[in-house]
Length: 631
Image 1 (tube, rainbow, N blue to C red):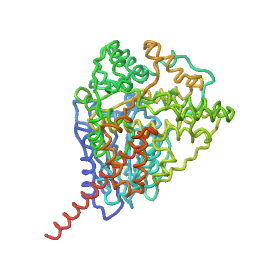
Image 2: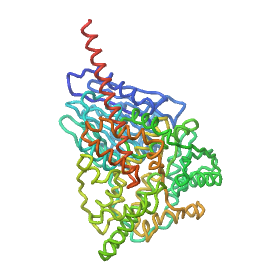
Image 3: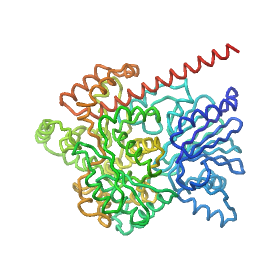
Image 4: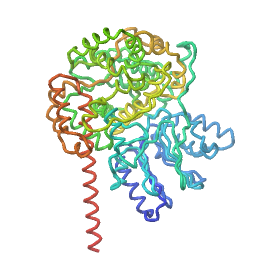
């Protein structure tokens, strides 16, 4: 893991020293991502730089920025898991790769395979490749989007970086709010690729290459989510070597690693397999805890950690941690992300950084194996729709009358979500159920909701929404939370469930092996029984949630209200009277608006940071002007 950045300019007004200075500014903004060395390469019209978090070859200075003899330059953030196999293949063909870093296989592979080279690469990566022969810059992101890469096209200049904050610092003053990105953020709590909250700045999509050549910018998919389904579920014995190899491959590093452990099946299974694959490896299990009982899974996690022989490390998160941590995350990363779990994730990785540089996590299992309650809702929505109108009306009145609860993922919360949007098609209803701010409130706030193309085959609804989650919220919300929260403290998070082999296996599972009756993750739970006690496998899904609803009525009330009344929201078109109405409804328990309030609070914090960056640039420009006048 590391941070990468660079600038390619065909503008004669941007001489090489200017490009090198801009690249240095971006690299400084990414310093938290790589404490173990940096590297720079510059050519006419091009400056690239990287820093490094060492988890392989820790005794060698090998930042992930390499130049091949043919003039191909590669900067890579991530890990090439099959680099040993690729090395052997090149050696058998009579070509030895002398550099020991895993990134060293990329340039030879590109020279041999051309633009299809990433089809042969397994791993977790975001990379930039410069081919001076063709004046070609390639930007690419791994299949599941675990690593991130942003780029800006401004005139004849291309900027790219691992985090948005670095681009903001380099692209000023050409930074403006993008209304479409803002609408997506308010609806979903994140900006899905290729959008960002800023004009000119885009995200490389998962499984995509952006090929930038003189006069053209092309977007090419080098990988697509498999579409073929098996008619019957495979055996759990067929999956076992695949998942074990994924865990083995992703823990094949030269430093100690740990695991993120909750009371749920995904992290528990991953931890159990990791202990089985490498029984000699010392492993610490890091767990997030809350004083609020319904949100705390520490007791379950601690018991499992002891049974698996892990050192158990708990980090208790309170409301007092929120303001400072959110401010720190926004200012380091430069993008709003409205997942409240971003706060505890960052705090637990800050503690883990005292011991390890890499953590394994259970991310991806829900999207691949069918684990979310919304998938059950989608499965049962047609049955509800076919009820007689009087029965539906009675059910709706009864459900809406249920009291608002501050407990974690209550039945009343799920039922209230379920009965909404029944007039919509399946995918549109899924987007409503998962929205941070529902359309009616987005309109009241003064921002038109984004318009989505939700056409799909209604007979394959679960496939559609799983695929949507895999391609949108997983990479650009969940994995963004993991990457930015952990790398702020120099810790890499890897998800064995997102190994390419696991993805392609899970993609073939028939519906009944994913969601059946009132059971989610049917196949994965059957498999987990080989490694875990039955009570762990059958325990109700809870997920990592934060007691935000009660905190916003209590210790965070004044802090949140100050953010909701800040004029920066009004400057982007949000009606402050409606933010206060939203807040008042939450305080009086008319509705639980915790996610909507949090989404606006994060946006307010981000807009304040963006304004501070603009002021800093303006002051620097004035100082530069005065210095020139004094010469």
